[in-house]
View 1 (tube, rainbow, N blue to C red):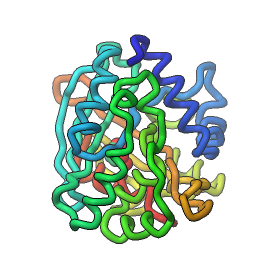
View 2: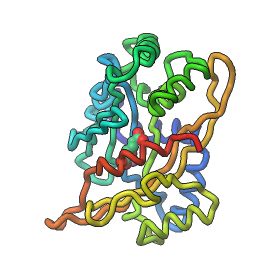
View 3: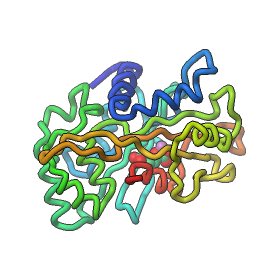
Length: 267
Ligand code: OOG
Ligand code: NI
């Protein structure tokens, strides 16, 4: 495991850029007018709730660089569970980790996921690079499509594995934009497609968090039966509001997160 938070995020970022070329354009659009590059509000990772690779196995890598558990979230329809983590340094990105509740799916999906996870080397899970190690298994495009029919999340995991599935621009830290509407307009004018599930803007000032996101890029995956382009990773935008006590809200909103997951749906 890493012991330096900045090194860990540099690796996560480089690995994310490999399959998310549009992230560079997002930075140019929103960040080029600032002295520093954009500040990220949070990142997110996905996994399966099997003992070898459950949420806590991913969390251990963040705890090792100073993160603490701060909230939990349930997604009944998508059969997911999640927690978020914060660093004592509030300028470090928050971390949102979810896991698929594998036992709630068909025997066929369970068998596929167990086979995938069985092929991960035990030592790989604690290695420095685990959080940006991608897939540890061979799946066919046919298997990908079968997973897709039951769970978009399971299919995404089979194609992309362990990596940050999005970074999130902190709108609060942007010099040239005050509202999420302005950010969305800038992105749309540049030709980006936004995730419209539940509306372009998820959340509201009342729930202390507004979020929007691009639709994931398509990137090529080397499936066992050939190469295919499938949705990879996306960029999110978050604007946070002050709580009545005057502190900024640092949590997530389950009803909004439920829709953000859909940013990796096929276009
Ligand atoms: C995470 C979706 C939730 C948020 O900010 O609410 C989320 C995912 O797509 O893995 O990122
Ligand atoms: Ni997010």
